[in-house]
Image (cartoon, rainbow, N blue to C red; front, top):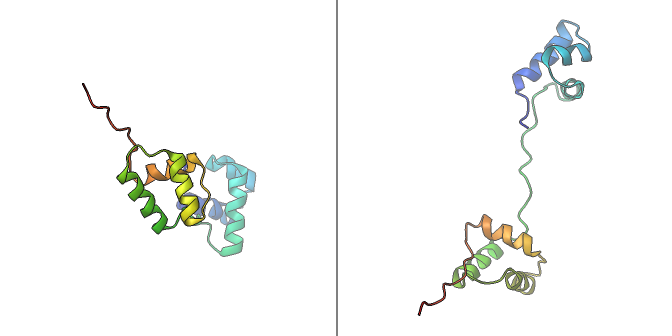
Length: 122
């Protein structure tokens, strides 16, 4: 679900301050939850601005860029390398413990495809 627009947040605060709407009335008029009205009013009191906070940036990568480059190199050298081998090499070289599912997500995030080599046709 997306965050409410900042102009809606300002309208909620303005209606509460200038028109004397209670929190429940504001929630009903603007068709938002009571918690949203409370959060916007509290943020306005604390910071002077009801606008949404900026995005925090998400989760930090588990491996350093150098380690990610090495994983990329390993996959490019051998396309059908097992995830367990990648995890073991990473653990041995960089002292970082990654699960197979985390390694799979990393390989996908690097834009690589692990593909089994084709068997030669007879």
